[in-house]
Length: 288
Image 1 (cartoon, helix red, strand yellow):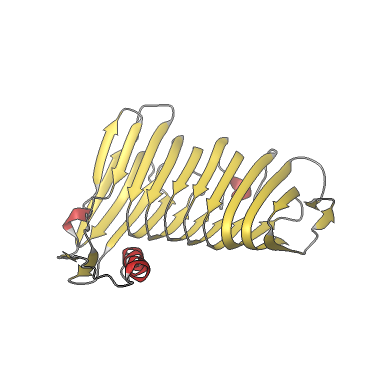
Image 2: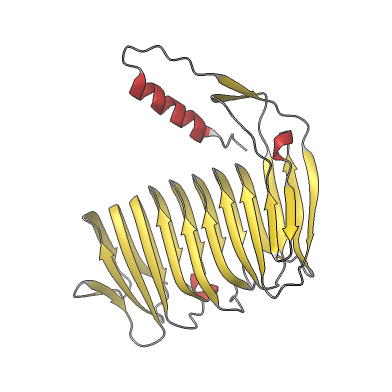
């Protein structure tokens, strides 16, 4: 795994470029010491609450989530070779926090060796509100069949694959995803069973695939910067896309039709309404 802290270096270079006109700048170099790889077992029991609020806080590295914790809330392992990355668990009734340790860096980081920080976690199927806060990382999330009342994800420069291969058995009130300059692919969103979805992003490449069983009408709001956003909707799903983007273009094919200010697919209920505000770039509409 390559270093996941390139963002710090990029910011430092940007600062030097913008301030170097006739100035002498001394930026401290902070050494980050790695050690032997530690493997820690993570085991968090299910709570007695009707709905558990699970908060996952993860910095840089690799984060993998999948179902299969059986009667537990979370099981799995954490591997790391920087002592400060040791995971911490806090639980107060229905509130459960699992977070990686903090690594304070002052200046440009210099690493003794390759940094490793990887979580491989299984989640239980008890009803939960799941919140994920992460930095510059690679994520692989299989949320198939989990009972998610809400899903909120906030991350930085990320490379994420998320999928709902099976329907969410409970109604999800909101699915909210906020990301920076990233590469994100969301699959099987029709199985997420949400009422409202909000996706906000910076520059990047984003694919939102709404395949699955759309059980009721839903509204999606997408706000993105300079990026390419691809929307994939099954041919048998009724959808309506409203688009705003002064410096953007729309590439629609596979059954999408222009109707006034909207792009439509099929008719009837349930209806998937998607509002897209794209600063610059391309909106691609496809069917499967």
